[in-house]
Length: 289
Image 1 (spheres, one colour):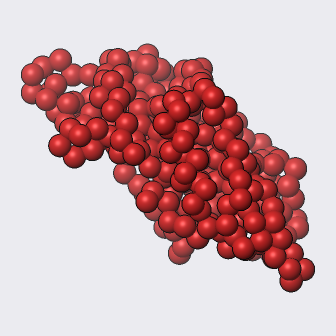
Image 2 (spheres, helix red, strand yellow; image 1 turned 30 degrees about the vertical axis):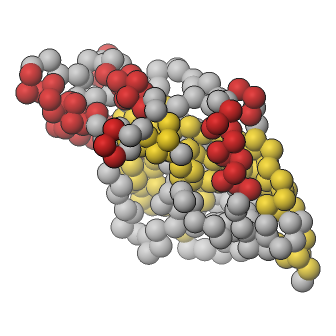
């Protein structure tokens, strides 16, 4: 699908103190801005038949979205195929909540922007679920003062290794997406500061390990936790959010890279998401086609 409003979204990233003013620096900033992406997070409910086909899809607040965009999402989801869900040896129909991440990227030759469904989550964070890692004490990091002064904004996606005693064994900033544009070295510095503040705070967090389910006897657990630095701003439902995506970092303790399509805007801030647990329906259809 083509969506022709990406330029305005990308330009919206320019309103911070990081934007360079010299001609050379401005050219560098423009080249950085050209790497911008925009995403939209939507929610709904999917009905899955006994054969794994989608029999119904209810997109939340569809009437608030552009009709062509709502129709595009409807077509995409209706074409999905899931692995049939079996209960006591019998395939059953079910309904599952879904959080969708739409991604818009500049199209080739200025022909408009390509929109695709880039991510989907079929579970929600439940702090009372004893089969998953939940929070015991999770104090979010303070906004770095110098970044707050220049109104720098962004999202950090943390990967946290939780030990059997509920303490943090290790943590990395998996990805840092920025809502500011500047020279590459400026943006690298901002990413590093957001990552450093998030990782430092995470090292003191404590968790409640699983006490039920198939993962309760694991030696450790890896969870994803999104941290948003947005100065109190909240994005209305169905709004495109422009950002400059950061490089993806891998956790040295992980042998599996499951969930690499996760993104901060797909996961609700403050939630704790199991990186190695897929307890929702299994989607067989590749995303983004």
